[in-house]
Image (cartoon, rainbow, N blue to C red):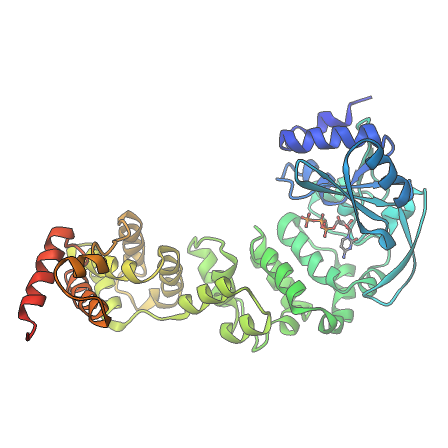
Length: 414
Ligand SMILES: Nc1ccn([C@@H]2O[C@H](COP(=O)(O)OP(=O)(O)OP(=O)(O)O)[C@@H](O)[C@H]2O)c(=O)n1
């Protein structure tokens, strides 16, 4: 028999020690769900879930007896969270669904591992790993994972009706693990249940969509979502894949927000409706600003001092990631009108990457030290010198800026 821990080599040492301790306290517990899938797929582990045939009160008691902090995070669902070295480990009692309305399930405990596996969404998520290293695979999940098949456990329609988020989870796993011909019956089931997506919170939709957009098989997966009528449901204002495909084909970074802008017809409307975070929304708004005709003309000229100056000025205003993202979008859209079919965009990107972010070298105290009394004119004066600094391609250093400040002050009417 292999030691269960021997398979955990890719986990950080802290998690390995925690699981070792939990297996000492609850020897019949198993690792379940995503952690087993990702261990087998050799992928980074995000969180560790365990299941046990012990009822939650017994789990709570055993952990407390062993001196482990235990929080009853969802006793009615059988979940106790052990906190070890400030990291949470969810331990859930094996469950069977008594009834569900698609959002809330009434559950009862069971000691039957297969029954618990049967209520999970996909075969690749229904695997469990015991302390002795035994892998329990009731529905062929290991073979599906190896073959890149995402299959529902049992009846796909029922699984979706239990929780409509599973429609998006299906595509998330498809984008991450899917290979070859997708399961036709799953797609048919999804098409028939697509209206259930309307009952999901926008936060849950966005969280899944972001992960779909980050998946290696994003293009193929979005095509499936389009065919199944899912994209139309979750993208207000509509979506089309051509621009995103061009972006991916040119080798753009797989940034979910960049891909979202390329995908959505109305990206502003989408980020508003999906209630994305403030930082994400700001990033999208910034990506959507277009380069001016003058900037594009400069880009078309290729590398040189004028381009470096223009890019330095842009960098003094906006984060590098935004500018790079906007360049990728512009390349996809404008390559045909550029004389060299987009080669200059590559040059512009390379120049941008090579430049340091310019920092305006003066602050308010320099204006005060130059003799101006405190007040709104300090900011005004700084602004004037900054404008001069930008007009010169943000090249001037501190000494030159101080000289310019003195000159502007001198020229002021007294
Ligand atoms: N709608 C859902 C959500 C979760 N699960 C089950 O609960 C496990 C844990 O779910 P979650 O932590 O949300 O996702 P993971 O599969 O663990 O994936 P990841 O950790 O990458 O988010 C899943 O593997 C699956 O067995 C399910 O059956 N149906």
